[in-house]
Image (cartoon, rainbow, N blue to C red; front, side, top):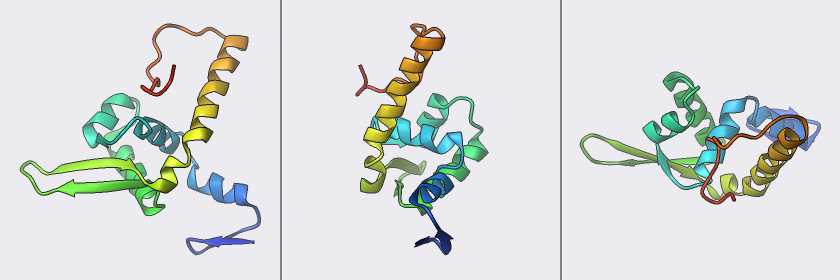
Length: 123
């Protein structure tokens, strides 16, 4: 058994699925793999997400120790999001998912030149 965050799980995959229970969290992490970002930058990159949802998902990822939120005392206030060491461990998993998605589309669909999810560390 696995016990974390006041929950009990029979399988470690269930822990992972409980944390990443929607499409937005993995998208946020994917874009933070490229380096720290401010809220506005994340919102512009992940344009389909509402500001409210982005705020909620960032808080959830921070509570799970996957991202770090740093506030700077300035006017206007500056807040920067980055991956924690735990979040950084997701890099190989997301890179594999990225490549799998490309391979899948090449086999069953079409890849265009406009690739908005591309990171600077990708080919």
